[in-house]
Length: 86
Image (tube, rainbow, N blue to C red):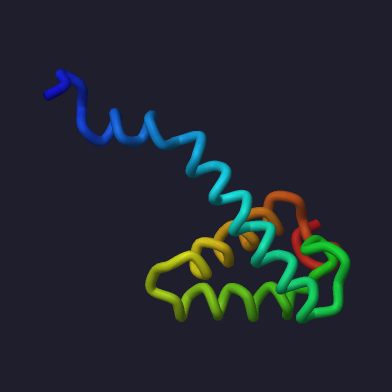
């Protein structure tokens, strides 16, 4: 057995792969969201559309789709929506 904290060991050992998986989930979910709302980019979403995504995220208890919604919401708030966060 290693003399390193278990969680730290696993976290450091999987970090790069997890980032790639998060990127893939983000891309898949954002593509579908943009297709659904007829936008080119998630920053083109309106406040009302983001509220729909937040509502969907709140209904999910876990899973890849919840993670995807959460990543989209975080990105929208970070970059700003054209009609909301500016």
